[in-house]
Each structure stands twice: as structure tokens, then as C-alpha cells.
Length: 171
Image 1 (cartoon, rainbow, N blue to C red):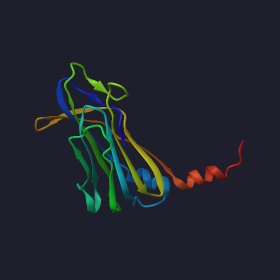
Image 2: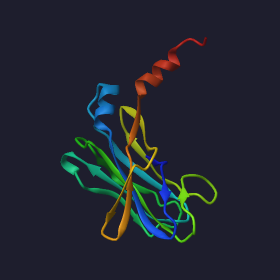
Image 3: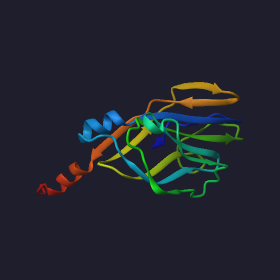
Image 4: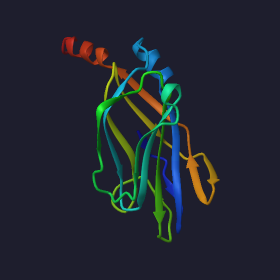
């Protein structure tokens, strides 16, 4: 999951969060129920990141925090889930990052002096999928914390489709 629409305001702390509802896209593309198992979570931000989190949305695990790394320091803080987390029945994920920007200018998504808000998960699944938040469309406040969000887009490709492509004659 990647929050590409980062717009971290100057001289403030802020949260960027979105709900990525995967179930419908997954089931439409795989003809399988959205039943995955999470083995490993790897969050990623740069120097301004202070927190990265991943939460289940819907089903029997609704609201369960799957990963919550606070005091993030840009180092790899991956988590091996043993046993793997059975996510059968969920609708998707709530994902986000918090930042503390002391600079005089806003910071966006990118390399170098810019920021990232990403989560890589290793799952057992009938499909590979990627979710992205391409833009921030809403700005609200949660207590004292400015909160930014935007729509999530999902890309789902069944593993079987990839295997079928390998069987195609070169042409």
C-alpha cells in the first residue's frame, strides 16, 4: 500500500490515512473469497515519519491493529507474524503514517528530501495486489492532529493469470 498523495504541511505534525477496501476488487478478479494470511509486514517512511500503522477493516477482525510502529526512525522495522494472521472475512485495510515536518515548506511523496508512506506485506493469497492513494482530497482534524485522506485505488492480478501468461507462445 502506498500513499503517493502526500502533502505534509510545513511546521506541523500530521497524519495521512486511507481505507483501502480490497474485498470487492479481489473477488471480482479472482472468483475466490477475500481470504488472505499475513506473514510479514514491512513499513517505510523517510526522516520525517513518526508512525506507520495497518489496521483491519470489517469482518471478525474489524478495528484490529495489525502493525503500529511509533517513533519511526526510517530504519527497517518489519514484523514477522508467527503464526500468520488469518484475515478471512475482512473488507480491507486502514493504513497511514504520521509525520513531523519542522521545515518551512510542505513535503510531498518522493526521493531525496521528500517523504514516503508505504507498507509491504507478504501474504498467502490467490492474487497479487497493490493499493495506492494517489491524492489527498480531504483535510480534517482528529483532536489536535491534522488528518489528510484520499481515495484508494486497488490493482489485483490473480496468480493464475500470471501463470497463464507464461504459457503463451512468444510473439
